[in-house]
Length: 145
Image (tube, rainbow, N blue to C red; front, side, top):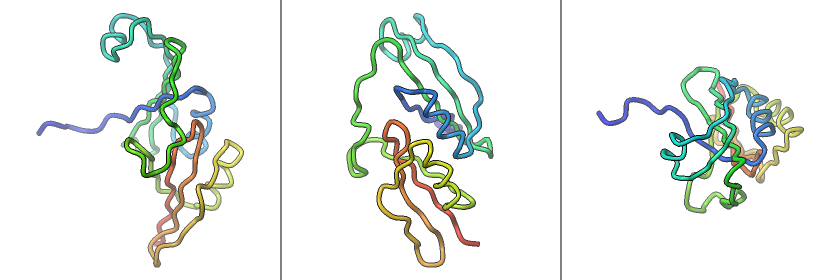
């Protein structure tokens, strides 16, 4: 077996505090924050003289993590953060929520914008996409019992 487990997904942002606040409101838990720089980091990521702040958040079931990085050096470049869903690359993160309407109401003050509609699929689920901070696409689904 090559892969033992998934550790985390990394997302680069320009406003770490806003990203953390949004995903904490969604229900993720902050594991910690730290400053990253030096030869080890430069060697791993391939950028000389890098300096960044990172925050690691985990899902309540402790199975998945998202690492958010905000670079002080070198300056971040636009990676087409508002690309549509059919653009090549990592496009969205999906979460199951208990109450979709409540979740949307709590996320709106943190900048969440509904991509189009909340849709119902048969008697299985209600789902939608929202754009969060930095244009991150988040799929939210509430499954019916």
